[in-house]
Image (tube, rainbow, N blue to C red; front, side, top):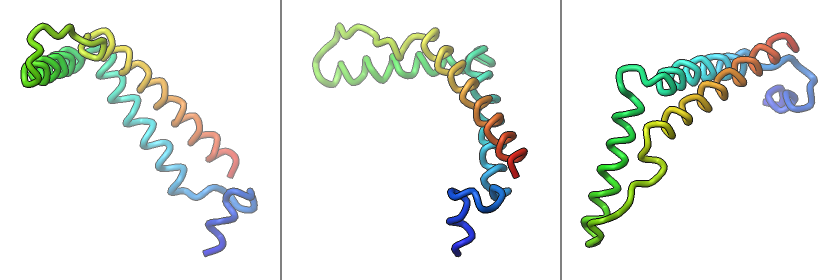
Length: 103
C-alpha cells in the first residue's frame, strides 16, 4: 500500500499502468483530434450543425426566434479544437515516453 505513495517521492520507478494510461490516452487523443481537425468523414461539420440546431431549438423554446449562432457552432472552431486535442495527445505520449525512460 505504501509503495504506491512513494511514486511522488521518486523512490521507485513509475508504475507501468500510469505509463500505459499516458501513452494509450495520448494515442487516442491524437487519433480523435486529427480526425476532428482534418474533418474526416465530416465530423467537425456535423458536430457544428448539431450544436447550431440545439442552439436554435433552445432559443425557439424560450421564444427567441432570431438567435445568432455562437462561435461553438462554427466548423472552423470545431477543427481548431481537434488540433488542440491532437497536440495534447502528443504531449501525453511524450510524457509517457519520458516516464518510461525515467524508470
